[in-house]
Image (tube, rainbow, N blue to C red):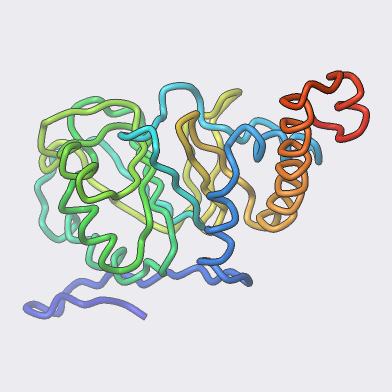
Length: 242
């Protein structure tokens, strides 16, 4: 299925949706009760290593969390002002599903703000619940005031048009990772908080959640036991989390 320009009928943008086999809203609510360090540890416990974006990717506001299946977007630095290519966003907006999280690569471009308030407003209108930009944002105060969870590396007031452009979406992309670049596929689970962003492989979304939830409960009991004055070694022996 495609979106066709209504005036010329000459170009089309494919609609590319990823369907997951779980309740996106319910799973998102469960993930948001956790924290990224715990989810990262859960992945490492089953041999899924290095799935954290590297240092410097943080929310605009420390209380922001983001959780949902990845809607991937591939961008490049370009001076092009070709409207037809720029309007690829028509297709990508039609492809977003409720509860998804935009994640944009930028190829290391530093020239402009690659995400802003108008993009966030349009995304939220089709059910997107947040954005992770492996680059920069602008309109930061507007994004904060509208409560749209946005993660980025830096902020930049410069307009992207004529400097940077999204050229494809819902394809595998690379983002900067803690050990090396992370391959992010459409539908992989994106989870971020004030410590950064982790990427859970699509097929591990529920397994990792359940491991992390179990540890979260044990940590709560451990925390209370130590606050009550119990010996830390005894607490660790009983609950297995310290």
